Length: 224
Image 1 (cartoon, rainbow, N blue to C red):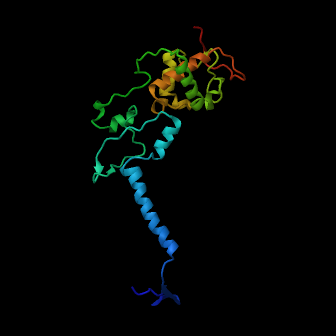
Image 2: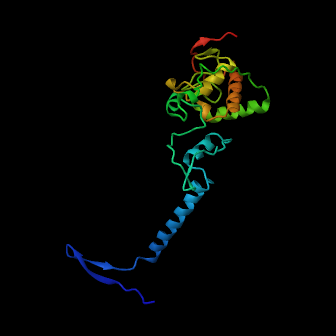
Image 3: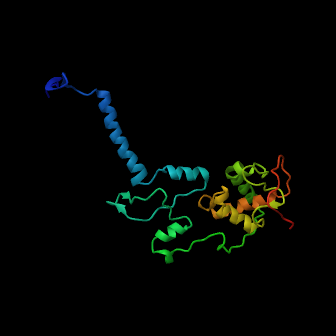
């Protein structure tokens, strides 16, 4: 094969002539490597569904017990999953918006809220479950309620004054549905139901513990 030589072309612009020359080998190597890398990346994350994407990585960090639930839907050409909005999450409790636009129409979805949730919860007493609740509390709740429940951005959980229902069922619903208007998110889409019960049970053990630097009382005095 004849060796390729640089060639000065007749084309010029503004007095500058174009030189048709070989691209550097290192540049070509990086170019071909990027093509191979992109193909492997697409296979690993989008075709074979082996790797976690950013949203799934976040969920696994927030909840170490997170397990990805395979999404339904058709695959384009049998390979790539059908495109979904980043806000699409069919496995969460439906919201009024998803009820309006969800599959099957409004009649197909029942929206669960704190007011319509009639479940009754009992605090767990097993040391292992309380320890799990404490671990989840320290990972997710101390930023607002303090390490010992003394309060911070959120209210004090160790005194006898409560802004919201203070019984076990009320605490579970507070964690599960949150109070978005006051800055507390709903944890039902992040923590599993058993984890929420464990955290609520641990919170119940904080009452009357008298932690250091407590936040001043808020809400109504609980006498039971």
